[in-house]
Image 1 (tube, rainbow, N blue to C red):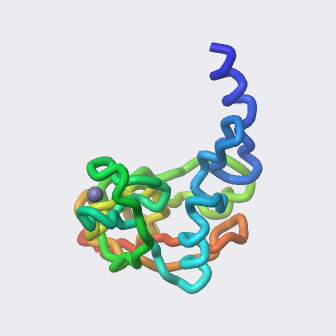
Image 2 (cartoon, rainbow, N blue to C red):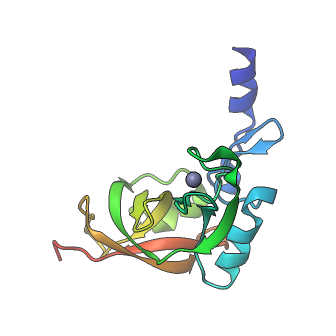
Image 3 (cartoon, protein in one colour):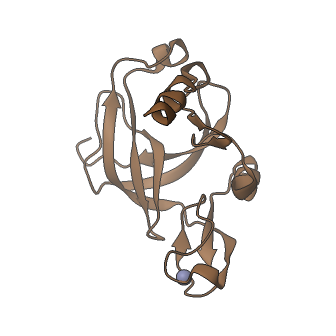
Length: 159
Ligand SMILES: [Zn+2]
């Protein structure tokens, strides 16, 4: 119980969605040794995923090993940049002042063609929401905190 309390106290909302637990940063927007190539890819507008050297399946950028092959090792591989909306939520109330000008905005999980799921920002036409399964296309945007991140533009079927 005391461990959980310690983790909760270290959440720094002023820096965006960032969760620090002990020596581990669980947020998605901070480079770490296992995601260095991911961020180098972002810098040149490329989405890098990991890929198992054994079964060749694509893996989330934070994966350190394939859940099936374990010791086969992983390598970096560029993603196609296409996927579908797997889940989403429209945010109407900004979690911090930085995001106040952006509401309503849409976040969620994109299911990439490589069968990898990523948490992301969805770019949708103003006043609309995506539908589950809508096609989503990779873009790079500088978000409210000044950081460039991969986002996904949704081709909205309602529009
Ligand atoms: Zn594998």
